[in-house]
Amino acid sequence: MSLITSMTIGCDVGDRTSQLCLLDNASVDVLERLAIRTTPTAFREFFSKVSQCRVVLEVGVHSRWMSELLAELGHEVIVANPRQLPLIYKGPKKTDRTDAEHLARLGRMDPKLLCPIRHRGKAAQLHLSMVRARDLLVRERVRLVNHARGIVKPLGARLPKCTTVSFAKRVRDEIPAELLPILGPVLLLLEQLNTQIAHYDRRLIETAKQAYPETQRLQQVDGVGDLTALAYVLTVEDKDRFRKSRDAGAFLGLVPRKSQTGSSDPELHITKAGDGYLRSLLVNCAHRILGPFGKDCDLRRYGLRIAGNGGKNAKKRAVIAVARKLAVLLHKLWVSGEVYQPLGYRSSGQRRAA
Image (cartoon, rainbow, N blue to C red; front, side, top):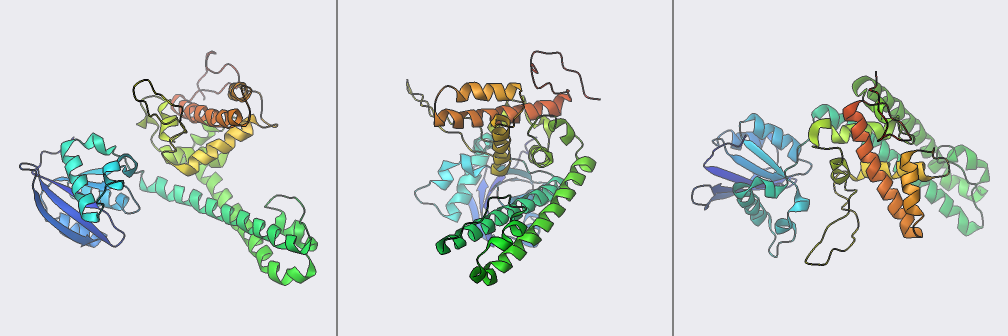
């Protein structure tokens, strides 16, 4: 419930210094502009002296602790989505001072214009950080493998095909002797990365079973494993945040953009809003479902029908369409607790999971 206050404060958050604009709600005049250090101590010192008011800030790396601290001090906090604020990120005279004022004026007029977001809880944030750390190591492993494969080709050699997990052991004897002193440390680092990634995998599986048992429901769908199920639950966090399950597709940026004007309604690419990592996981699951090893199910049949309507672009559309339906399906299974039926899921009478 919104507070009835005499002032709205816009905060343009910087990594070291944040700009504040204090706006009078009665006269819409700027009362004061100032800068404070972007630290919990500085924010607590300043806002503890300010009467209860509405504080508007952009989402970012500091917005989570800021919103918690300000709410603790009794202020109404609105965390704005910068992707929805062209007035700020496309302004002709963009400065930190003007950004803070724009946030304050938008927050005073109608908070819905800011497309407010809400931060996930601390426990979910910590567990999601573990997922992201694992992803970082996986991407670094791929980069090192590609580097090793590329560096031997100028010498006329070619390393055998294998998985990234087995790469270090598989290619050690295939590397030209003159490159062993160069690539030896790379192979050693790959082995260490394998060990650390396996350690993360065990922790993620344990975390999913103990703290998020609902992930087991999501893994009923073929192609959805521990990592995707856990990332989905941690990213969405609250299963009741959507009015209907179909909103999950838009939340993850898997729906087309709209730019309708008059009789023109062009077909555009997806919005790519929301969490890019989870979106990539769902797209990978869609590739698995539509691939040669995918099991027969409604999702696969739906995607193959789309892919059969054209060439390469149709196949890409099929993957995105399946990923979008998968996002909706996972939320539906999470909310309802139903037993998933691969074929005829929507039409059959579903039984609730025990």
